[in-house]
Image (cartoon, one colour):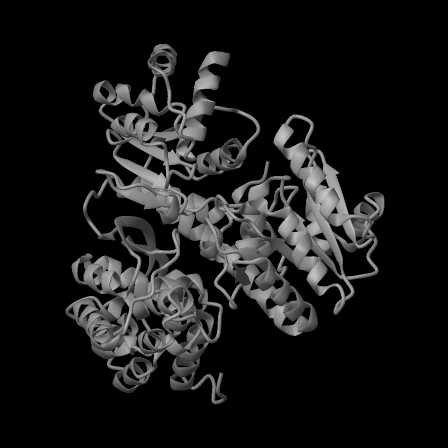
Length: 222
Length: 407
């Protein structure tokens, strides 16, 4: 079956910039978290997925890593690592969850640990560039072919970045499969995956497996 | 000199495809790089490898070198030290010397390319041409300016803030500025002599020539003999593990003839090593790239117990060779080593000794750290990523204050 609209695989690349802000303790972390632009929240909760995409288990988000390893506030670090990134449909709601969790902890914290000089938390942000690759899909076969060939940055764009882009609220693959190809079940099964628990290559294999299963090309699990 | 396709077996076709797409998106832009030296030093090394590859991608790239006499370089040396915190400032005549050389160079430099990319403080004053040329200017700072001499920094800042964007290697090295600041890490070239793959017989041959026995696990630190690299601390950490573990420590550094302080540190290192036959101190000339490559590849563990560090490219080299590393948590090192994921970060002699013992006794864990480190280096610290970041940087000039760009 041919899709109503061709799916163009786009890759996402980012240029990192400094916000000029740095926090030396949890109180400053919370204060600056409330004022940094959304692209800073996005950077610190997502960039490690691309940078460390080969690791299982993956290191936690930047906030959790810094709070645990530099401030050595283990309880707070654990709470930040457990923040369920997949459950937020906007960066602002994620920001509120993170600051809410820190503020609650601060109410009861007897004293604040301070980061050693040069180990402060530096707030960064990123400029995201989406650019079309050479791969396009008009049906499931071409979609599978593209999935096998595109870069990690491309998968990242369609799975992670897409979910935070309005108004779709779901990954680009599921959206296209559902609306342009009528593959509602396949779309749902991809959307149900928790992408944050896979390495990027693991995620690629899992999606390929689901598509192959639907096309009758595979029965075995990845 | 390698061409882009030579990198395909290392980084994959997709990475090269992305570079080509980005270069196409950029259009036919002309770029000129300006720095202060054509040979020697990390900046020249990177520009030398990168310029032909950018041209191959269709980004017409030139590279110019600023010219100045001895007195100019005496001033720029003072500026360099001041940026590292030396309290000695510059006298008025030294500022005049610095600015005079910028004017002299402007007489012979066109700098009308679409993008002018100035490296480090020496040519920073060339920005005066921007007003006439109406093009885009970038200032790339390869130096750690986190704690500069305020007087010298304020002088430079008046020039830096006339640029469209500044670029630093790591946030910890940067300063608050009124212009946007991109963060772009340096890189290593996986095809250079220092990093290319080597056969076992090649490695064994070099180690035999250098009289390094392979009968015990080798722990290596490659760095000049400088107190900030803490070579004596390395020896102290090694001595703490000797009663539990058979190993050999190798301290590899440059010859110290032209550096009186280096010679003094070398004496201290020799004294700390005493007559221990398991501590080897090796002095190599600065061109010994293949020798360093072989030594790193033959090592079981790599140390970089720095007390202060720039980006720390010796760590990148070790990660790329899939070696487990134990390094001081300073400068750019934490950007490269995520503690217990892609290596180990330490803060003391005791911590270094503890992890030396742990990794020697747990070779499977050490191997996993090394493998993770290699992947981390492959994804983030190779020349192709550096080129990608520069292309994104050039593109970002077209979309000021936009954070999502659909090309």
